[in-house]
Length: 367
Image (cartoon, rainbow, N blue to C red; front, side, top):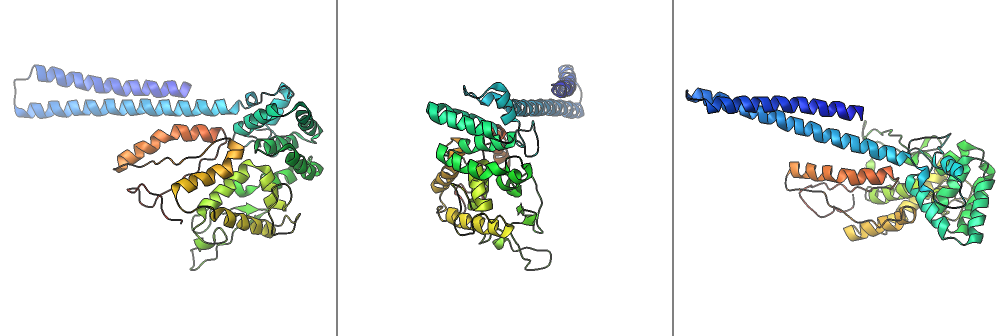
C-alpha cells in the first residue's frame, strides 16, 4: 500500500504539471492578439499538457492494477480458510494448507495443496457418509508427516473415491516420512517452476535428474522439436493438458512415476520408477490424450474439461482474445489478465492456445 501511495503521488504530480500547462495555454489564448506563431506555441503547450495528463492517467491505472494483483496474491496465501469440515481442527487446517515439498511455505503456488485443492477436498469430505468421513480422517491422522497428509488430501481433491484414496495411501504410506521420495514421485520437476531451456528455447522437462525428452540436433545449434514430446509436433495440446492434470492429481502422477495405483499407466513394469519407464508412460498417455482431440475448439474445451474438471470443479470453454488491430488485441489481452490471475492464484490450470495468425478467429490445425 505504501508503494501504491507513492505511485499515486507521482501520478498526481505529473497530472498537476499537465493542468498547469493547459491553464497557461488557455490564458495565452484568451489574451492573444498577436501573430500565428503565438498560436503555434499555444497549441504546442496545450498538447504537452494533454500528454502529461495522459501519462498521469496511465501511471494511476498501472498502480491500481499492481495493487489489486498484490492483494489477490495475499488473499490466496490465506489458504487455511478454504478447509471447512467439522472433523478437521484449525491447527490441522493450517498444517495442511502450508505444507510444501520440504517444509512449510506461504507461497500458494509452491505448496502441495492449492487453494482450490483445499476447498475441493473439504467439499467432497462434507458429502461423505459419517463412516466414510471417519475412515478418511483416520488416514490423515495416521500419516507419518504433514506432507503425506497433504497428498492424501490432494488425492481426495482430485475427485477419487474413498477406495481409490485408500489404495493410493497404501502405496505412499511406507514413504510418509521420506519427503524426498514423496516430492520425487508425487510432485517432480515435470511441472515445477524450473524454466530450463533446450538449445531451441523449448522447455525441457526432467525426472530423476534426467531430461524427460530427447531432442537430437539436426544441425549444430538446433534441435528437432518434432521429437520434443516423444512423438511429433502435433501433440503440444495433449502434452500441456497431461502436465496440467499431473500437477493437480498426485494419484495420476504416481501412475506416471511408478506405474502403480488407481491411475496406473499400462505398458511399463509396475514399480519401475526409472526416467526411461517414466518417459514411456508419459508418451503413452500423450498419445491417448492426443487421439481425443480433432482440432476443433469445441473438442478442445471438452478435452480440458475431461482432464481437469475432477481437480478444479470447472467446465472449460474457449475464449477468443483477438482484435482488428495490434492495439485492440493488446487491450483484449490486458482485460483478460485479472480473470487469469484469479484462476492461477487459486491453483487452477489456464490452458492458452496461440494462433499463428492473430487476424483469424479459428484455431490453427494441430502443431
